[in-house]
Length: 348
Image 1 (spheres, rainbow, N blue to C red):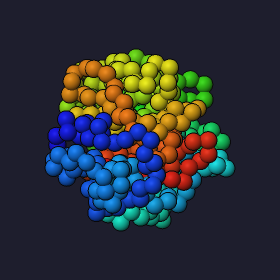
Image 2 (cartoon, rainbow, N blue to C red; image 1 turned 60 degrees about the vertical axis):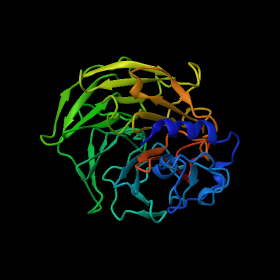
Image 3 (cartoon, rainbow, N blue to C red; image 1 turned 120 degrees about the vertical axis):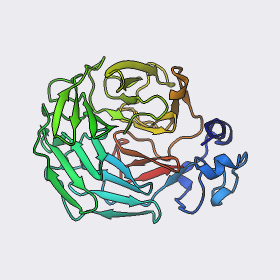
């Protein structure tokens, strides 16, 4: 993957003001973020794949539910799973929806979560074929300390015998590899927290981790360490203008870069994914709802977040399900933009 070309394509080719929502998903067309376009060194995407203007964000088929504060997982390079979340009536969605990339279709699970929850945008982890959902908020603002486990092949749920050390919603959770999962932050109805734990999948036990520099909740977090520097990146309600960083090598947290939009503009409820050596940050802002995208280069060992001008999402949103695809690309489903959304899109 030649990311100098990738960034050049995004910064030079993608034009401000283009109506991304005009582009519908085409599984057969190489996208602006795809290896095909990058490696061929395309410098003019007009008309490529039938998408005049070189659209990057595709509007996907419509999901089955209106929901916000849901979690997302991607698997196998072709499937995007949306879990939990709250509805316009204050209830929680119990069914899982799966979007299949090769078909551009949504299917709904037959099974239901044992305890449907919301406020889990960064709280779902894929490990060894299973999805682990840490905590969350039931209807009526009831927090739980459960770890709910979903088997996507069998379409079955179970409750892990080990509870979380405390009932929380909005925790950040990331797969560190080797069967270890970082769980950090979160809130109850009174306070936000900055403690962390490492959950060992094999033994089903939690070990206390280091404190976060800033207590945080409703956390967006990269699903795994970035391959360039081995670190996990996160942001949330209280750190909505910058990133915090967890380094598994030193078992420590630190304060990361300020977002390109500046120290007074919020990214709370954004999507946060790795694409090779970059962290992609998109959408967010709890009150005003954003559609713009920015990028942080982890391979530089420092530096700043850089806006990707003109690469706006089709729909501004926050607190949505997000995930990455190996095209490479980004996915966003549901969320909130003044209303509970029933819309999904992807960039590739």
